[in-house]
Structure formats: C-alpha cells, structure tokens
Image (cartoon, rainbow, N blue to C red; front, top):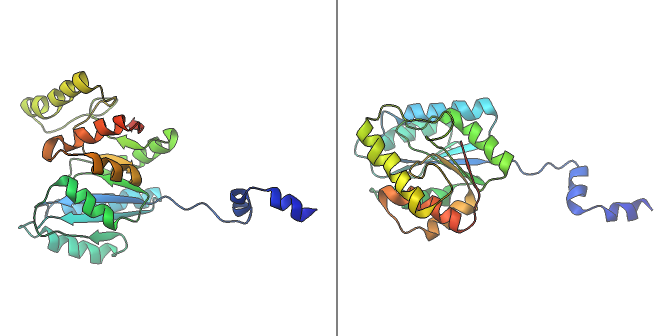
Length: 228
C-alpha cells in the first residue's frame, strides 16, 4: 500500500521529499570594457562585496575589446585575486560593439540570469540585490534600472546631456512606441538568460539606440518588465 501511495506522488514532490533542493540561481554579470583600467578594480570590488554580503551565487565576465590602456592586464590580476571561477576574462582583439560583446559574454556565462551594466562606475552594484528581489516578486523576464521613477536619478550630468541623451530620447520613444517602460536608454538590467539571447537575435541596432530597441522588442515579444 505504501508503495502505491508513493507512486501517486508527483516526481518533483518525490525529489523534494528525498531532500534534493531545486538548483540555485546563478547570476552572470557581463562587463564590457574599453579603457577602464582605473575603474575596473573598483567596480569588481563593489560587485564582489555586494554579492558576497547578499549570499548570491555569481560570476563576473569581463569582455575587454583590446583596450590600449592596459585594462586587460588589470583584469588578469583581478582573475588571480578573486579566482577564475568568479572572474572570467574573455577578451577580444578590437572594439566590435556592445551587442556583440553581450553575445560573446553569453557564450561563456553559466548563470541562468544575466546582469548587464557599465564598468565606468555609472551603475552601483549595491542595487543588484534589489533587482533580484523585484524579479522574484513579479517573476519578471527583465528588470531594468530607471532614473525616472522613485528615488532614481542622474548625478554629474549637465542639463544638455540629460536632455539630449536621456529625457529627450525617452520622451520621443514613449510617444511613438509606447514601450511600457520609463527608461529605455539605461544599460543597467537583469535578464533571464534565454530572454536576452532571443532579444539580441532580434535586434538590428548598433551603438546608442541598441538598449532602446531591446526594450521595444521585449514588449513586442510579450516579455514582462519590472523596474527598480
């Protein structure tokens, strides 16, 4: 009788009863660099600190595009300091663009979630645990950092740069495309890995508008987007 009851238990439930925990989420940070010799040690230190204090499973993939300032040498030293299981240097010979940097980085990513951010200290790693909490709360496909809601903001930019590079572009896009997200030009985001792969396959833009197209494509494909 006992064996019949056991057989009625769904396989997943039997695995949990057997003491096997579901696989732990892992977060792969894609960090494209070009002439970031001075910034790279600090952004990596801040990332390691944030992940370690939060108990988050992670890896940091540095994609250096042939920086002439010695960024690659610095990355090699960081790999030795923190371990090649946490810092993965995956360089390229020359500057080939942001979209291809993400494609290159994803080939080496072992996480089921991807975090994209800039290495120039414009994005603070202390917000990453909040991105992760937001994703879990809403089961979102994408969580995007926004400068235009809540306590978000921009510091150190003059009015002209804010208007042309950010608010102006976002306003025009909101009117024309109705993307359902407040900040399309930002590049501090968390993606499910398979979602990011699909979006990059669809995107045709290069340079500045690449991040905007990613969000617009996400809406077209009915992916869900949360904001922090």
